[in-house]
Length: 470
Image 1 (cartoon, one colour):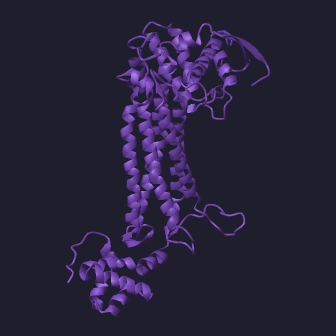
Image 2 (cartoon, rainbow, N blue to C red):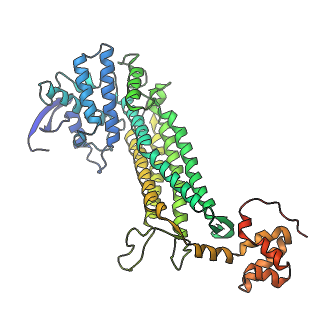
Image 3 (cartoon, rainbow, N blue to C red):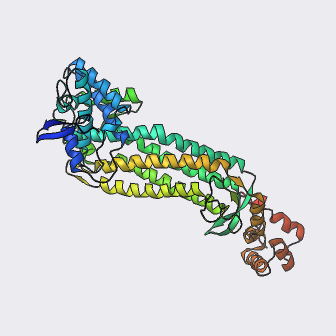
């Protein structure tokens, strides 16, 4: 901003504002009084507020409450804000009033100043368009800000998050098909268990994300109900009875996001159950992603002193001191994001519990954390998919060695020998460093042909009618 200033007046008096700033007095007061941290209000939320302002202006003109010329000018300026053209003029921190009033006024002031300049007036003149009387007509921060929260989150879910989640699921499903015939030893309690295919293991990963996506999609219907029309406390004071319904219809047509006024505006202003439900679904997806990333980096550990069953893509050098070292960096990045999503969800849950009487006043922190989780987890899943899953390769020789040396293949002998004798085979093999076939033959429990048939890992991948123990 320039060194030149202009004086603006609001209900508390005169405020000095940078001459080239599109915001006005109320934004300036917030800028000065809330210099807390570095996190500014998410631009997705600013853009959603602008979308609502444009639709509201046109509806107010239809209702005879706003001159058509002014409504069209407001809608045009609001569309530019929503498109990101004026992002530099939204400097306010997340850490402000809990209703988001100052960011709502930031949007109102920027739109009003854009219109007034184009109509021959000056910045800060509030004429012919006033930020409160015209841009904010029929609205309160208490209802328009939570409506923008829902709209911003829904757009982020559909435009950013779901496509990345779907792509990651598809990559896992493709790897499951690629690895369908590759056998490996299973592990429970971090100890050897019975065999499965690498494809079966990866099919479980894909389905975990499918379950998380189902939970996320189930949460979206609640976000379609918005607080708009409730104004200050839910009663709808100072708004037209048809205002909210018409604005929602316009927004739905323009964005493809189905919105409608909440059945109970008092609940919509004072609580944020829909957003907490969505945040919980993101936490569940992060939990699944954490498990997948950790499994893959464990299987890729080594390459010589770890499990070494998977070869992870070598994207960048892993050490500043150890030449040739390559680390599972994509898995590490994804797991760190998952930890952040867990923290974001905890913040959302606590903030959403703080609705006192007719208003929850933790709205900005809820919006920030939900939008952050959507952006971070979507980006991290996409990066993990492109830079890890796509280049993942099984190390067949290691997988085979681990499989055939495992003592837990003895489980297939239990139906034939009984649990106690099968356990003796495993213990004998372990004490004498033998494979299971050698151990069962040394103990004289089975003939070679039958033992070889029972100990084939390929026969252990699904249900089969067990043989009766003698």
